Image 1 (cartoon, rainbow, N blue to C red):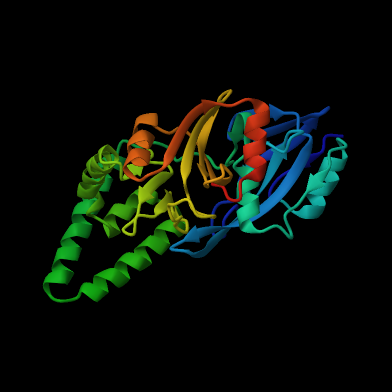
Image 2 (cartoon, rainbow, N blue to C red):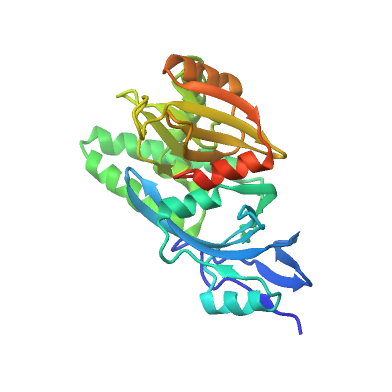
Length: 316
């Protein structure tokens, strides 16, 4: 008999239910979704949930299942709602224990998920949108119509009406998942995106920002604090300084095929872990301009695991 496990709900409320299917091939966990298949050998399965942060308050809750190695590093991240009883029964077939986060804080869960093993993969289980030759013309047409409506409403003093229409439109876009329609309700994106990219490059050249356009960023705030921006998320700022709890240094690392950044306090303890690629040059300018220490290191497995385990926060 082949035991199969599938999620019964979305990773975030209102989103699509992933089409991921899990099976066992001996000790190997096989995740199949959208014509893609991943095989890992987990030491443990981990049911998680955490709250995203938006403007300093809890935002949407994210749920999922992760396959961990013997040191607790994430081999495979599987967003979606996976029922506890079904996960427990499925894991028992391979003799794999299940960990949960019922009493863990969102900060701790995020820190654990940010610890990625070599070869880490995330299987979303959601098919990508089919390309269409009409998409680009429709984007510009929607932007032009949206801009015309915005100009008209603002010209007659109905700015509040435009704001209300824009909010309703964004909600509908999230429901129907036609993301390109966002330009109809935010038409200035057609103009602002290239300007935004150029402005970010300028900020990076002045040591005010580090990070890619489509990923996590470190930004120096108006009060000279360190702010972590991610897509759809803004975390509470970290004050810069040598006092306990403040950001005093940055550690950009390479560990096998993994790279990322640790924000450290004055004693070298990690306050936040942000996996992913970072430009050393951008980090050097940001550190030099804001009295932050910077180290760029290749870590051993032991060093990496120690930093991951002691980090108090993370960005999954």
